[in-house]
Amino acid sequence: MQVKLLDLTAQYVGLRGEIRKVIDEVCDAQAFVLGPTVERFEKHLAEYCGTKYAIGVSSGTDALLCALMAIGIGDGDEVITTPFTFFATAGSIARLQARPVFVDIDPGTFNMDPRKVEAKITRRTRAIMPVHLFGQVADMDGIGRIAQKHGLAVVEDAAQAIGAKRDGKAACAFGLCGCLSFYPTKNLGGFGDGGAICTSDEGFAGQCRLLRVHGTPGNNPYLHLELGGMFRLDALQAAVLDVKLKYLNEWHEGRRRNAAMYDRLLAGSKVKTPAIEAGNWSVYNQYVVRVENRDAVKAKLAAGGVGSAVYYPMPLHLQKCFLGLGYRAGDFPEAEQACGEVLALPVYPELAEEQIRYVAKVLLEATGS
Ligand SMILES: *Cc1c(COP(=O)(O)O)cnc(C)c1O
Image (tube, rainbow, N blue to C red):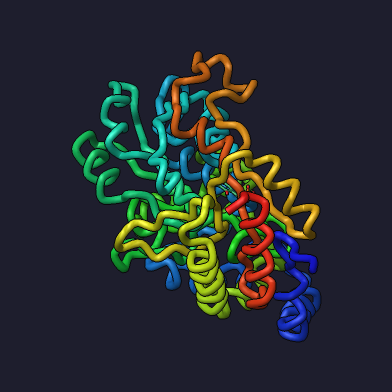
């Protein structure tokens, strides 16, 4: 049996007619950038995330960059974040000449450990950027309390966690804003790149909209009030995403059902299944286990026809481009250990039960469980 890590075709075949129709509508209107199609999607997205506003942008990376620019992060500022995440989280900070200040993760959830945050706050700290990794909301009570005490902005990197909840509240609604990615592998994936900033702060939303189009107010394209970027979302992407958004909760349920099945099948074995904190409703963008001899296990899965992936093989503080920050191996032991043990299994909603049973069987054999 072959089980891919992710099969987007399975989702597309069911929506082919509906998606082709809205693509045709954009083609007929020949209005490709921002405009009413994007505005309609932004309205639905804000409703979905429980925020007042959503600002569609060109990618998840640009959502993070634009949000930090809108706060006014710049030269000499510090932003506290996690070293165990996709590069864009820290990259967006560093691109503004600000300094990513890392704190280690909780080994159970892989998310930023709030108990380690306060020691990293200096007079230059401006913001905290937690990541809701693999679809589970970070400890936003702990992080929010520290941010409030020290007057820091919280920017949620919710790229992997659209629709995820903690104590009934959705990702993006905890901090000043949440940043989403619509990269095709995310739970809500477009037909290319896309992203969004969700916020309930009207002034901040306005600033993001301004910076999205080179600091231009809506009514005058040759007036530049601020130095921004070109962070616009395409109408074709918005049209596709607006269709898919209607099915997103169903897909989350499918991922959660698959995750629960893995939890049961792998219980009591040498495979460490994901730890979900009480009160958290994960959307399982990835189902990530820990195993010993990870690379050998991954090779055995591949030999058995099972796709898997390592998110992430190297923590950000050891990346070449960040050597200038002065971090060393050993600085964040939990993140470093996770990099050597994690393995993401296929969890996409369209998987059949027999496929999940097969993946679990091959994994149990590969780990000698
Ligand atoms: C995917 C992702 C991003 C960036 O999204 P792009 O749309 O690919 O630019 C940022 N942060 C995290 C945690 C992600 O997983």
